[in-house]
Length: 348
Image (tube, rainbow, N blue to C red; front, side, top):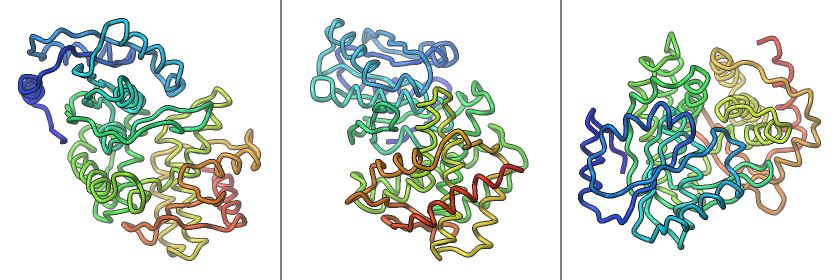
């Protein structure tokens, strides 16, 4: 399912030749239209007609209004059930494009060509599609696998540093929940750049895929991939609501700091391990000021997390560096302590 493309995109062209598609729709945002689409079109060899669908960039576009607009365009262009959607972009594009494809006419085929580190290592893999509802992250979506994921690492060279750093958070998470060696290799990088992360992308992708293969519909072990996301998504959602969005990876980094400390407070890991994790995450991610959010707002969002059951907050927490448990319910006191712990780290 995951294929690394050569310079001529021959694997993609073979895929298109071996399948019968009535039409191709390429979903991009303004950034991937400018920096990535010319590379794709320059190497695309197909007789199938295609159309470009473009949206504005940013998480704030991942909503039902955008989706409805694109459904209408597909209808106006007479897209049928043999059409193919190519999602060329980061996590917003692969999440939203997959959702559009999985619901339009009860499902048409799609492939992902991730262009960011975040989408390569995380968002494009696993068949989770979705959009945000109000300011709640990924509240509406489907489980639907892409036909293929084609990875062209050279697209990473188009990314600003903050986008590369955003994706790096998910790579760190993969190491923390499943592979101590991967974590240690990542934190030893002297510089966070494309050259440094490139050798580790395949490992991160493999970790995600292996977990998904065990539990596609997230009934058990796949929940471990949510480490850092319970608190992280809450803060990301609040920032979106306040019209001051932060990148997903920045929110996840914050969440991993809080939830590593929470793992310690719950007696799951040692204080030393917790401190090692926090110190290494601090090397890459700046402090995010939470003073504009009151605790009630944060807890309201935590109580709406998708993993919850019976109005109880379910966390995925570390049981060691390289291992993780899921469906762990914490005391409100410890959750509050973990948030306060982060707020007191303002001297990053």
